[in-house]
Length: 318
Image (cartoon, rainbow, N blue to C red; front, side, top):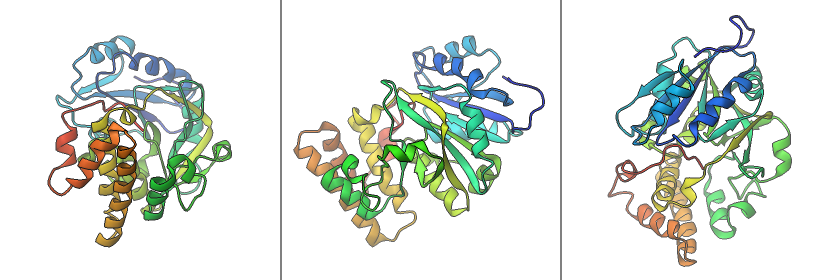
């Protein structure tokens, strides 16, 4: 589906929506796209991970001009993104979207504008939760000290101190444009030069930390991730925090991404900090942490992807 004028100074955008049993939420996202795009030339690709509900029918009815790709299996978020990008070989940029995102008017235009900043390859919006509160969607790169700080005092408290927390919780940061290490993958605009140099999203991660991995690889390739506060979006999701198996997948994938850039000693320390985090919270009675402890202890014996691939939803980001 193409919208906007036939000729524009802005690059063409392919909006890639990855769905899994998303019939109840995807139509509102699709309805928000035209106003969010404004004058930007765009097309829509929806990649479905073998939904068992009527997601595909809902998409075809709400957006009859969209390209719909049915993967025939629950291949994961990264696989959906890669399939959507492959279906739009002429696009100058790709907008990655969760189906439970609602884009504000002009949001994509603002994100496109951010790509014009020197060395920027990825732009992300200011995200709010469904109740209107600010979503702390920006992150610092993972370190042992930050993982330990989060274990000892919790993510929100640790996030107040850059050396001790990965999550950026200072509301003032969310008022100004600037570069950050990585951010939520629920909505993200990527330039073609960035995609071509960094390569495909890592499908082995299946669910969670794919955006961390891609953003850190982009940084190593010389591309900055740029926060655009003038671009607004609402995110309805958050399933990982209540589903023990999804939380375990998220936790294990944090270790898998970390060890790609660090030696065995530092990776062991990072793993230990995450294990301490989950142990403390498991003792306090958190069911998600009890499952995460088991997943961390069994990392060497079982593939986290094999465990997670039997579950969903792939539409929920942290």
